[in-house]
Image (cartoon, rainbow, N blue to C red):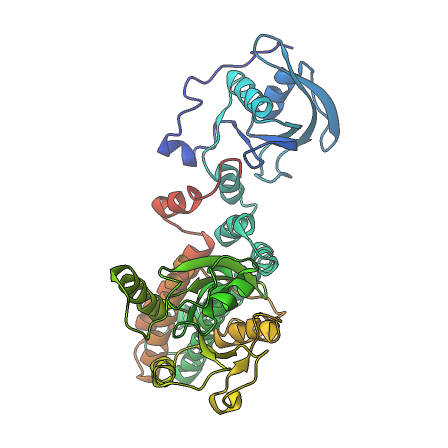
Length: 467
């Protein structure tokens, strides 16, 4: 058994070359816990030499599979680094499908970095971003959809985001696509068999059956794309813009939604001159709430004029508008103009200052009475914002398609629709098969059964190092 420094040091250990991303020959090492200090930190090693490198660092012969072992880590000079717990996961029953060593040490960045450097000196190289998960994908432990769900789970900031990411990791989208692909494969098989009887045509399936089957696939893909809209909202979040004329209580309401006194609140008109934003969790959906300048008054100066212009721009890109009207004052023409301008948009109309005597009937405008002073109506407002955005979460698994998934599923849907229409027109089987094979290729690209290397590189380079 060789001591510290054993193995062949890798001179390119700190070089993250693009071609290294798809190489599984090297043994890789990285810190797997977030940057900063903590009670514990984990260094992960994966590859064929993982066990021997860990043995080298701990100066011991071996580690029992799936047992936590107390081990003293040393550097290349034999000096102690830390007392650690080492766990060995032999291939193929590990996260990556390779031999994996996880070293739990004290969470000092200096200690963890010293362990990584010792691993480099023993023959490992630094892992690229997402390379552990990439190896899990390349070794068939997970498919590409599940790999992307790993990143979503890491990035989740609300419990609902974490739940839908975990559902994806468990294979909810994969199962839905597999069900559609099974129908597609059955249809392809019967049409392929019919090609052996060219004189008879549609020998194993009729044109009407072909059209119905492809129509069912199109309907299933349409439902998936529709469901994906809700999943996108949960995954990426929404923007809610608070609008209204000056001094109607926009900033007070913004502060209540934000949970802190972010905006200055005074009786002086035009206090808010720029956009204020705050990220909040509303019913599990991440919202960026935006407070704006009053948009229906003459600007006092160039600064306020710019604030009003930005408020109008924010209003145009909002997923949900919170239209604030002063419930304690008579409506004015600018209020009615704002109601007309936002009609047809996803919105919640608020009658503010509900702790004061009302001067108009909120029901007439389907307005929600709210008091920022007493918090009356605030919880109802949050629910109405979710409803207006059509982002109400259901207990059923939600398909969280990202942009890549949506584009490919859309292409598959269009190809299946062309095949359905061609079958209705009585077109020969080989033309239908071209469309169906295109749809199947899209399914394969979603799950990673066939995906270009540049797409894989783009997906995994967005991961953090160590995952």
